[in-house]
Amino acid sequence: MYIHHAGRLPEIQVPTLVTGGRHDEARPAHLAVLAEGIRGAELVIFENSSHMAFIEERGPYIQAVSDFLTRAEAGPPPG
Image 1 (cartoon, rainbow, N blue to C red):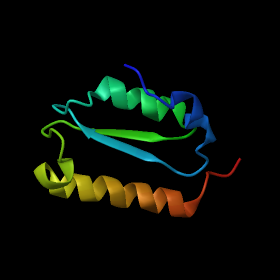
Image 2 (cartoon, one colour):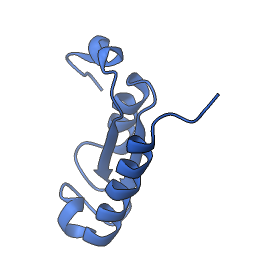
Image 3 (tube, rainbow, N blue to C red):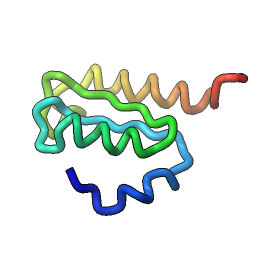
């Protein structure tokens, strides 16, 4: 998979959640490239969704985003 600005992904210095559906054209492997390119990014794949997990799996999607925001607001773990 080719990501036009993949070399710039490490410039992203904020908590990042990458989400996608198992059956989307943006395959989980493609999303993994994004998540791996962003330091500390989290990847969540919704198993029963295509492109609109926020509709197709509304409850799990909202929970994933809520959990991510809770972790992001807490800041990095001590150490």
